[in-house]
Length: 128
Ligand SMILES: [Zn+2]
Image 1 (spheres, rainbow, N blue to C red):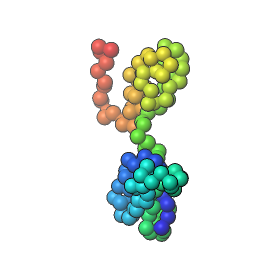
Image 2 (cartoon, rainbow, N blue to C red):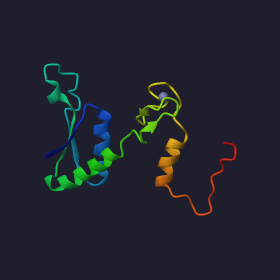
Image 3 (cartoon, helix red, strand yellow):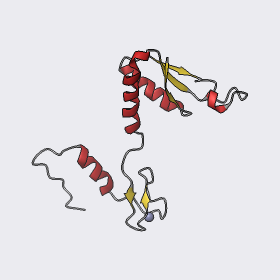
Image 4 (cartoon, helix red, strand yellow):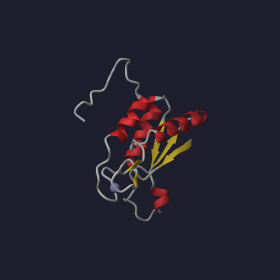
């Protein structure tokens, strides 16, 4: 038994467990229900934990965890506000400081790096 993740967010545990199990690694959740129900248990002991049964697959499980972490729920890049010049993290749309909208090209830049357009394809921005 090896611990893979300790997270107070139940969704994270479930999500990673699903990924492990789709790779054939049996996951076990501890403290799943105790959170908040047993106030006498210190928080550190009641945080839900994800364990794997098979120690041999620890490296593999950690690789999956790494891939899962880097493919975080919040996608995108930090972006610089064109109104106030402040740098915002991707989850801030609009700008956390002045409320200006996130420029449309921030996400375009990201997706154009990941998805190569078919040759001969020209985006139609005539109305932009
Ligand atoms: Zn701004």
